Amino acid sequence: MAADTPIETRSLVIYQVFPRNYGPTGTLADVTADLDRIAALGVDVLYLLPIHPIGVAGRKGSAGSPYAIRDYRALNSDLGSEEDFDALVEAAHAAGLKVMLDVVFNHTSQDSVLVDEHPEFFHRDADGVPYTTVPAWTDIIDLAHPNPDLTRYLIDSLAIWVRRGVDGFRCDVASLVPVDFWVQARAELAQIKPGLVWMAETVHPMMVENRRATGLPTAGDGEMFAAFDIEYQYDLWSIWQAAVAGQVPVGRFLEMLRWQDATLPGNYAKLRFVENHDQYRIAYFAPSRAQALAWTAFMACARGPFMIYAGQESGARKWPSLFEPDPVEWGTYELTGVLAALAGLKKHPAMRTGEFWVLADEPCIQTAWARLDGEALVPVSDGGAGLYGIFNVAAVPPGGAVAVQLPDGEYVDLLTGSVVPVSDGAAPVPESAVVLAFAEGFDAALWKSPLLDVFLHVETLGDE
Image (cartoon, rainbow, N blue to C red; front, side, top):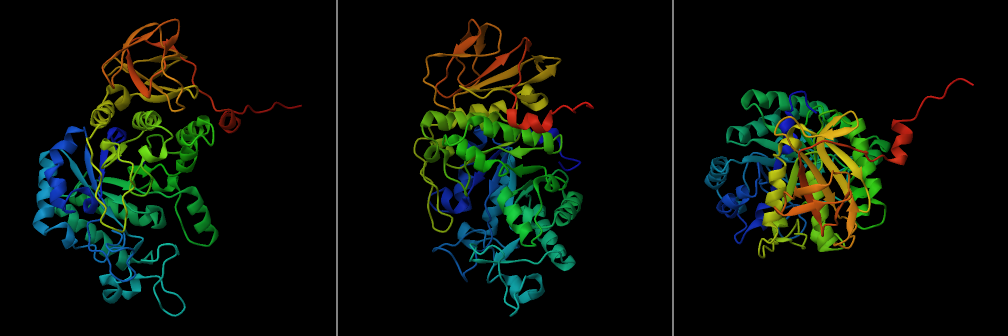
């Protein structure tokens, strides 16, 4: 974590919006008109995909990718006027929301204004032609870091938006840009507006490995926390996808959570989500609706801020196109209550000041937010309560019983308000998930990973 990242960062709820695909007109005004509903979900941060003009040269699709940016300092007129942007920021702040912009400083569109103004800012091949180091990204060209003049231009560009009221930045493929750049940007912009939220789209481990093997400097997750408050969870994403699909045991994914705890800074904040603009919708990807809800609940209750992708509250299955106008299928907002309850849990005293413990991997994942006192899990002192989650990610038939570690009694499910009985050390198997509040401590057997224990807890052999 950056040295000044507050612990409250892990309790943030972030709402991701693709403005072009959000509403009927595909403009910022659609988002502004919906801010009260978004805020009512319990959201803290409104995160907008890039809002800048999109390049024409090499454009993919009829509308082009918002990540092929032509001018960092301008607003895409297709999204509305400058006044529309300012109105959105003002209304978001009035609704209690911070505004986060998506910035793309690894590359630009092929016809960026910088190509003519600052041709020295770009990587060029032997013939002097700008190019990209990721061949699949055919609509963009790479900026050539490090370059003090480029650094100055980019930080000054960010400052323009901060002075217009922006509260933070989500930084696209941030691992491909030098960490020193981000450290400098964070420090300088804090002089304009303290408390900006910095979120890095760190990349998949295979991308780090492949780029380094070809001589392309690429930062790992531990390095990136020198500058960022929040990082994407792509370090474990592939294993999570395989666990959701039933291709690997759920315990493999839980091993990766333990690995994060053991290898990342002590106060790290990994962004938890089950879908975003680059990934399949969970309602499409999970084997069943109940499993989609169980995984959503687990991710929301895991350590780190939680992100909702616009349309998730309607159980949307369609993955909106990045290159064409493709409005969200809003339906009936059927999952609003579930997501609002999960967002509310992020502010529970146990999640704000306690620690996250995994207690079981099967037949259901079981977790607790509490304080460890010897071998007992006890409620945190602030608020006098702990949280116990049961997540039926494997679709165990509901109605049976699952052994739990809670003392016998009746517990309130904070997702639905219903009472859940625990008798003879067992609770009913939920259809998807329950999160129970407990007030008395209990001796706990924490889940152990056989694989990681070899690395993390191996005892030193004595002399022969």
